[in-house]
Length: 226
Image 1 (cartoon, rainbow, N blue to C red):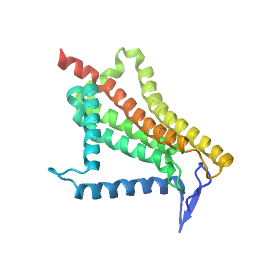
Image 2: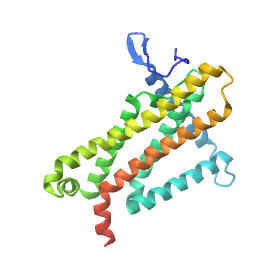
Image 3: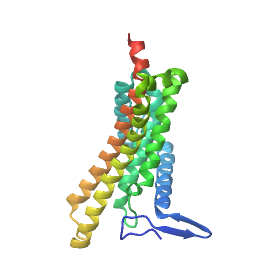
């Protein structure tokens, strides 16, 4: 049973397997997104789009323009991953408003997984765009700063994870305190604040990942622009 009274992960035993409830909630988010995508796909229409379709198309166009402004001609390589990242993290942040659930991003292991995914994608696209030798070369400019460049790559990913974890966890702690004080009459404005915080943190995580990716390939972009 997924706990509804707290925010810290617990170990659950399902048959012979012992897993965290964070994993169950993350799987629930995955099933929700997959189910919603399947239903939405069936209702897509070229001539009579629904309000949901129009909203998603507007969000898609905004995200595409944002990626294009930052990554220039290489934006299509990163767009699918970044859209998935925004959607997944945003849903993880907001699922806490459903009774019986709490945001899996308030467990440090989940933000670390997101940050590691962004880390892998950054280097994968960097190598794909600039080539292995060309991408590796920017870590040695100048040569004696290689250890600092390597440390910066690691600290960027760690900072992404800790930032998301800290903001979501602090919001859940405040909500838990207010629930203890006010009971079920939790102020509605705070719920809206929780929604805004969840969406904002997902957006910032994606934007920072996008900025780090841009730095990884900007040498290649600058040469092409010249």
